[in-house]
Amino acid sequence: MGNVSSRAWNDILVTLRQRNPELSRPWLAGLEPVELANGVIRVQASTSAHHHYLTQQCQTAFNEAAQQVTGRLVTLEFLPPPTRELTDQPLSFEADEVPLNSDYTFPNFVTGPCNQLAHAACVGATDSPGRVYNPLYIHGSAGLGKTHLLQAVCHELRTKGCDKVLYLSCETFTNHFVEAIERGAMHQFRFRYRHVDALVIDDIQFLAARERSREEFFHTFNNLYQAHKQIILSGDEAPNGIPSLEDRLISRFNWGLVVRIDPPCLETRMAILRKKAGLRCAQISEDVIHFIAATVESNTRELEGALTKVLAMSQQCGGVIDLTIARKALADHIATPIRQIGITDIVEAVTECFGVRLADLQGKRRNRSIALPRQVCMYLARELTSLSLEEIGGYFGGRDHTTVLHATRTITDQREQDPKLQQSLQELLDRLRRRLV
Ligand code: ADP
Ligand code: MG
Image 1 (tube, helix red, strand yellow):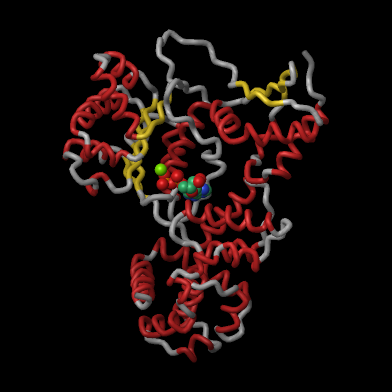
Image 2: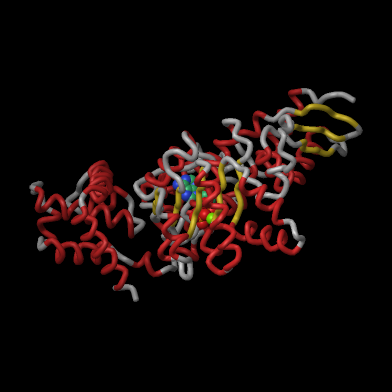
């Protein structure tokens, strides 16, 4: 038995990063081998989420990197984190629940106007579980970060030493329930679900289809609620928008806080891309970030997929990441109709909506009746076209790129506070999109 020198281990990490940049995570740097025996390097993970990630996604890549560095047929074994002292509970809460994704933490979550409230609510629920927002219900369409936030809460609660945090998909709850009935093990089932500090269930809309599970969930909910245990749920709709969810559940979900996550605006999409690129240890210039964010606007999952495509394409092209590579990687997305909105469409819609003329927008006047529509144009051009800041500034009377940046920030802030502006923007967006069909 021996150990791997820290230099060799460092080389293994560097090699892994070079060969498989997509697997690289900042926390890998904190891993240390505990022993080397019979050609097996044992490395201990510090959390079960890290352990899951290492065993499920990195095993082969690590073996290959270790073999390349040592020139020998060594392999890696990832050990789970040291187990905590067993309490008097006979049940293991880690046994068959969904493992948490180690990337879905609060520091890795980017906030913007679209998700600020949901984020704050999750942080609040983490700070005083069961006290402030109970239940907490997060909703929004697919790919907007619900699972990420729910899992971030679980990571955080566990870090704080809260062991009995149960995170699961609605499907797992239903499966466990059905299995418990079949095996006559309802007692264990109830014990398991009612002795938690926090119950976090993802995609609760799937509960709607199962009447008996709904009934059981109703009792579980009441039990936990009365005991001041934190309940967090996510769904693709607000509680009253989920078909066939009965009123008593809808009203209970509304007892606490219900928050919606909206699709991210351009600025937030750009910030998310920067964060995801950082997580993959990739350096990407701002023009490429802007290009990807302007091209892919459907949801964050797609945005991340686009980033992966660009990184993969750049790897094939010797590691360069520039606009040409990005355009090539996202050729399919660029063909989508939304890209065909031009600056003239925007100007036409805005001049009509605000009753101003193009000459005013391109002119020097800066009173609010002209400045606001001009800023709206710049904002929409950033959101809907892939024109650069300079190009947009140039179009509106040769203005500087910082003016455009300022305009988009101003409108992003103001739309939050001004319902009238928010409505005008929505109408403009609808109108511009309608043109394409
Ligand atoms: P949902 O559960 O709402 O369908 P997910 O939580 O699975 O969405 O998010 C899809 C992907 O987008 C995940 O990889 C997640 O990390 C990422 N994501 C979503 N929102 C954000 C955000 N605000 N900051 C960073 N990553 C995000
Ligand atoms: Mg999800």
